[in-house]
Length: 181
Length: 330
Image (tube, rainbow over all chains, first blue to last red; front, side, top):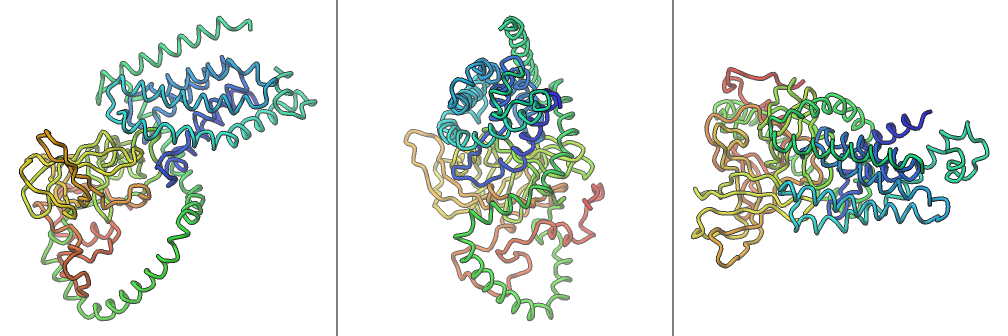
């Protein structure tokens, strides 16, 4: 399975899960983890910055047009594209620091939520007013960090499985993957 | 690292594309050229969401079971008691049923506001800061933009976009939503504004006349828009829970607890035809304070247990249906 196909499957699955399940969960504070952002971060960490930013752009555009969306088209595309680029740029360090994925996910979640709110505020979106954003932001980052191990693990697992026919020596998914690259 | 320049070039191009899309869509508003893109999204993702909801609803149900477990036992006892009471009522009520049906026909539209609705199910929910849901009905079911959406409990929101098989609803709690509201039993009108469900607070009601006294417990119904779009009159919105005192402000603000539980929306109804005359306060459930248990409720005000919205459509007498009737869903 090619890397691009895998990335698109992961993004579509994350998006559908996000709108049909995650957004309807009655979690405390009525805030939910952003699975699409987590998937973009994880894919960028695995595939590097170029593929990360393209993945981010496509995922963002899909999030902008998926049915219940009611905001200006391009907002998520802009944010996820940047996040994909930034998280992809640290992907070379990943086999050296085992905790890096989780730090990156936390930083990416915070940066993504802030950036989205800032773009909304610049467009005069009433939903991005300070009282709402200040309530949502800490909870959003917290839930993202809680959900991140699962998403990152799934993405790493899928990529290692997809790459294994070419690189049979890869027991550990991440270093094996990097040798293959 | 030999592809850094290429990466930067692609990043620059894609960021420019996003900014251009934001600009075009923002300037275009409702008639933006990019709405074709949204239509594409609806056509592609709508059916997927339909299918996904059918698959994953047991998962969500299981989650609800876990989170609701502490209260579930109490609820079961309460429901059992209510069930016994209702069964008893039913036995006595069967004799009166025929007469009640005739009465219902006679009373016509006043029955339950006389809204004609298309029942729908919530299939997905909006992301980030927005409070929107999509329904499993679309233009094929007679749904058009700017129609009111209600549930058995009260006002849910309004339809903002309609695709072939799905439609997007902006909930009343969305921070971008503002609804004309009227205090129960008076002519005092104001604006009900959402504060964002994810903002964690209830609705806000601003009365236009600052001299009128509001008290907690008063209820608010929709005032109705011009031409009944986007909001039909008389739909219950919520109960005033607290009055905010802001000195120096020209208007008074009250916090309103909505009748609808926006976190657990499931079956709702889209109003495809407004009532012929304003139902005023008749759709509100009976006031809770004076004598809460009166076994045979008058036919014009059904008991507080909310019937599913489908009943409101089917129990409307055929003669009261307006001529240009969109096809009911089925």
